[in-house]
Each structure stands twice: as structure tokens, then as C-alpha cells.
Amino acid sequence: MLYVDDGTVLTSAGMTAGLDLCLHIVRTDLGAHIANQLARRMVVQAHRPGGQAQFVDLSVPTADDEGLAPVLHWAGAHLDRPLTVEDLARRARMSPRTFFRRLQAATGTTPLQWLLTQRLARAQSLLETTDLPVEQIGERSGLGTAANLRRHFAGRLGISPADYRRAFTSPAADRTRADRGVDRRRVE
Image 1 (cartoon, rainbow, N blue to C red):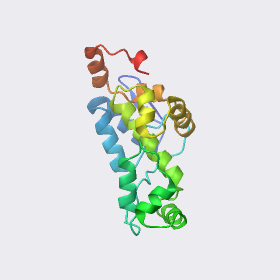
Image 2 (cartoon, one colour):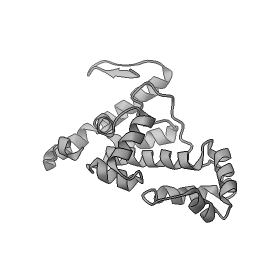
Image 3 (cartoon, helix red, strand yellow):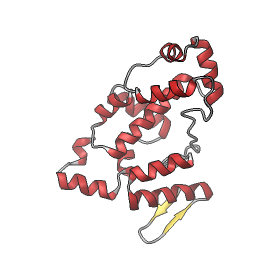
């Protein structure tokens, strides 16, 4: 456990886990959207269920590495589409091989891993902020099917989309769903 919230007593397992606990408090008090914005600003994962390495967001290079940033911003806005290295390289006006090398140098990851990370981040955001079923979240995030979303989510985050949604839904969002008569079990 990274942190424990026992109602009146909250404690964390260390310095980085203290950040996790702080984000949990913000999420509880102000909602998932504010906590996610704060986490992105701090360049940490919005929620770590425990047992995995610290997350560092390398989604877009901090400096515009010869035209990569606009292409990556565009790709981030079109994750629901099929995107290939060739598509992104063409948009960056580079050969696929040059694009691959430059993206890897700028972000520390391959283009396909970068896309997977962005798609999982989109899925996380949709799980936190919508009542969409996992089938639609899979489509909107570009992961395709619910089964593919579940497989990648569990593989990368070590948690199912349903458990993630439960962990990141703010009490205010739960009340809003209850007011609308939404049964969480049917949504997931």
C-alpha cells in the first residue's frame, strides 16, 4: 500500500507515496479532474495502485525537437484513429526511420509505446470523468475493444479499468451518478 486513508487518519509509505496521498486528498476534496491536472503539472501519475514504478510523463518533448511536438500534439488529439509510424512520420515530413529515432531520443520510448501510453492516459481520463462503458472507452482511446483495453490496462497499470474507475471516481461524481440513477455495475 502506498498510502492508507482510514477516515480520520491518513498515512503514506514514504516521500513519493506522500505525493500519492496528497493527490488522493485533492481527488477526494476537489474531484478527479483537479487531481489529474495537478498530477500532470507535477509530472507524476494521477494514481498508482502500488507495486509499479514511478510514472514520468514523456508524452510530448519539452523542446520542439525539429517538429516533433506539433505532430505529437496532433496525434494526441486523434488517438481514436488508427495511427502508424508511417502516418506520423509523413505528418512530420520525415522518413519513418528518422521519425522513430528522433521520437525515441526525445521521449525515451518508441513511437508505438508512446501511442500506447497516450491511449492509456486517454482511457484513464475517460474512466475518471465519464460514465461511458469500457467498450466505448476502448474505441475512443484508440485501443479498440474492451478486451484490448483491459489487457493493456492490466499489463501497464496492474489494475482493471473497473477497479481504476472505482479508485478514481470522486464522491461528488458518485453522488451525481446516483442522482441520475446510474447503476455503476451496468456501466462497467
